[in-house]
Amino acid sequence: MILVLVVPEKNIKNVVAIKRKGNMLLIKNISKINMLICLILLTALTSCKKNKDNESKNKIDTKGNSMQKIQPKTIFSFFGAPGSGKGTLAEQAVEKFGFLSLSTGDLLRENISKGTQIGKKVKDFLDSGQLVPDELVTDMVQNWLIEKKETGKSIILDGFPRTKEQTQNLIDIINENLPEYKLRVIALDIPEEEILARLTGRRICSNKECKAVFNISEPGIKDGGKCPKCGGTLIIRQDDKPEVIKDRFDVYKKNETEILDFYKSAGKNIETLDISKLNKEEVFDKFNNIL
Ligand code: AMP
Image (tube, rainbow, N blue to C red; front, side, top):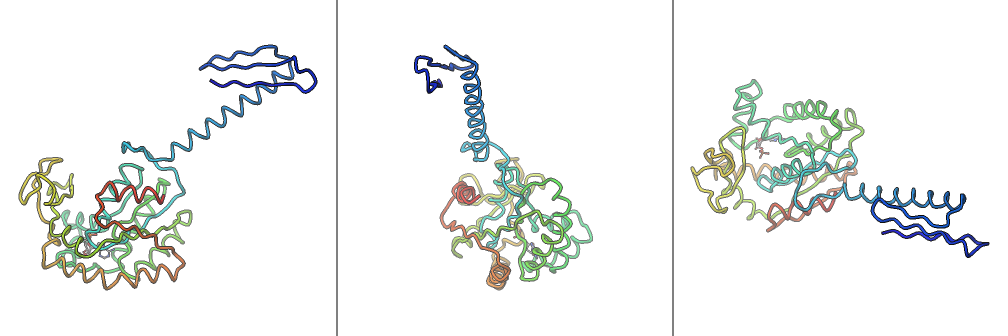
């Protein structure tokens, strides 16, 4: 209930009372001038409430319901070692905020499984844990970004850039083609031992429509078992085999410092999230808190 009292300076007896119960409004002893004041006050109250409603729309629903997070157009570059959880976090942000996400690894694997020209060119690189040539992956990312910018949605790049040259390319692509977008670099920080445990235990669904990711430490997940989401067979990704994991890790380490230094020299702030020992919901909360 809202109660508003308007007391004119000269005539204290002339007290106007307004009571609002739900949709009902009670006004007593009202003169024309006081009526005007009341209308102004009510308009101000309604506008206050509208602002509050809009503010709460910007917050993520704690039950995890899907909603678009309203914020400036942003390209988030997720940076972190293979297995640090970039893909999982991107998936959650897509589902809960309506962001768009591009995993260059997924796009390359899709090309391989469809047998495209690009797929044929890159297969050996992926199988051996080596990076595909900068030019090829940059063209793919540039085309994708230009196609998606019309949506006006915030975008996550999962796995790009991965070299100093790609970092320069990304900054150029944004400046030339998406100047309305702001670039934010989010680094996922996690100790090496934890990552190795994640990668060796990672199992993915072989169903191309599903591609869900699990870990053998989770109940019910085992080699050759069934995907809890779609019933597809769980498999080990070719490049998660122990002999390839080490090479992927070495490639990452070799480029890590160079990329971060390049971002810094280009005046980009690196926002680091310490995600050691956190489950995926806790990682998501950390990300949500910095938005
Ligand atoms: P991911 O799924 O992100 O772990 O990537 C799997 C593989 O795809 C990597 O080991 C590389 O062979 C290739 N790849 C993905 N993103 C890039 C990139 N930005 N530059 C070069 N190669 C990439």
